[in-house]
Length: 181
Image (cartoon, one colour):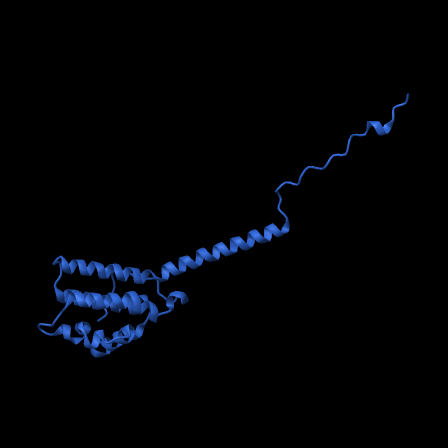
């Protein structure tokens, strides 16, 4: 008997399943889009964090001034001068608002009132940041002044200056520097 060549053939078998590597073109495009989106998100978060840095530093510096005043490490007049310097540095140097650098007295108080949207600085306890602080015995309510400046920093400056989103803050906030009265 002759060997039948058809009998020597093996049964039909399927090819192996394709592996996961290398991915198809669509997966490469999707991975590139995801990586780009992730990089943009991280970059935006870093920019936002850096833009808010002057406000965070101003808040912490104001809290340090308040605790130093409460502990008796500085007088009420020194507290007022330090608060005025803090506001000038925040507005002029950190937020790049040079028009506030030359303001003093009632102009400075009016500008702070405009930023705050109230009359705390020209009619309230914030008057002491104007020329009143140079009088012999100025009337100083340090707690009310702290609260007014804290409100200005916390709410009003963030609302008024949309520079957080536009990244117009100068990132060079330092604890030293010129006094801006």
